[in-house]
Amino acid sequence: MTGRLHVQNLPLARLVPSLKIVSPLVQSPNLSPRQPVSAIRLVQGEYQLQPLFWGLTPPWLKVLDHAPHCARAETLSSKAMFHEAFQARRCVIPVNGFYIWKVSPRSKQPYMVTQVSRAPLLLGALWCRYHTTLTAFTDSTALISVPANACLAPLSDRLPVVIPEHALTTWLDPESPIDAVNALLMPAPLELLGAFPVSKHVNNPAYQSAACAHPIGPMLQWSISQEP
Image (cartoon, rainbow, N blue to C red; front, side):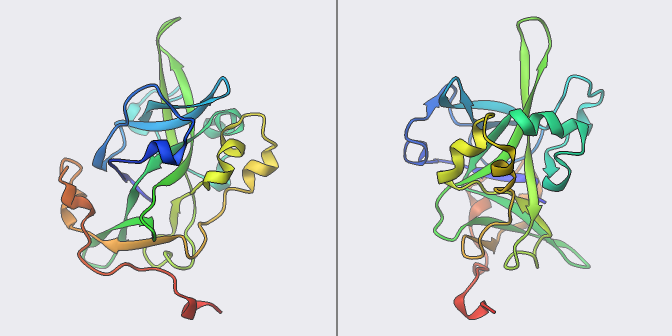
């Protein structure tokens, strides 16, 4: 499962034309959990971009290091930490791509996952609010993971869920029928995503060079010849 994001120079006006940018996009070539991350939420009928803390921190959480940065889609309804947020507080995190690690006996090789077209992705997430005083609060988020599709399963068994642009309102609106929302919790289409190896410098979250996203090998992607 991903633990790093690549967020830089996103064409937000094209991605979500009616988006209100409440706070500038948080940008990083190697964004790690326990940091602010920009998310899109539906607020009083309009799409808004706002920073959230990446690591879900409900009011009763005692240890910040226990704040999950990902939630499995299969447990959203059964785990108390995720159930209420999934029902009513969903968001998307816009990214250029995200990193996963292929584990081998001697090392872990990082890969960048992007759209094959290199267009931005909207990653499905949920959020919660923790009031520190009557008027002050912190909003936090966790990505939602689903099983990897057959193309990328050799690299990782789970990936963040990708929300199609046409389904953005369904995903964000708390009034959407939960069956319609659950229908979006699916592995990405085989032809949508690709992954290419990148430098192992990415393993260090302090490494913030643009070279994080430079391929060091060919992109793994689905081809028509692989169709059954």
